[in-house]
Image (cartoon, rainbow, N blue to C red):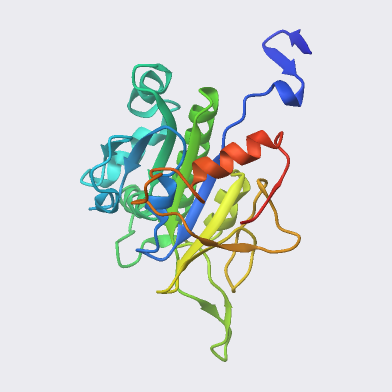
Length: 269
């Protein structure tokens, strides 16, 4: 069923195109980029992290847009609704992009702070000032909202990666919680716009993925998984396995299972 009114098309929910939006966070080296690259199809990786793509090795299903050596004013590009004319890449079937990955929001937010300092009288790297932090928040949220809109327009999966911050403690030194390395209210504000917010950790023996608040970490949430019985799983995804780059516990396998289940929540592994 479809209803047309001036400027808007109204469809039933089961007629809507579906894609995954995700915010994946955790400590450096825990496997975030590797897991993100297990998303379906060819990936466009927008990279802000120096040497951030080294963990991917030689892969022909990842195209890299490397902005890690740009100056901080690169954030001005992402104030646009179509930074770097990315719509041309996403709409061109010859590129075959199915997923866009932004790695990482942590590095981007630092660019945004520096841009805020440059535009705020009296602000310095040592003392950025509230104005510079306000610019960081606004510019980072603009990136998230803009990329979600752009990828949504072309029905592409969109994954943001960010890092884990140090613990927030009480006056006695007890850990209250640990969140993303974004600063201020950005972790919660960014998470509001995204369907899947997962935390990843490497214990040295195994990699665990949490999809709901736990282990003193927040925020996490999932519309894909049923979290009534458990909130985490041990990842057995092997990027070097015979069935890589997808296979067991890849993001592609979860999306396939979710879609096969009619968009209803699936069980955690």
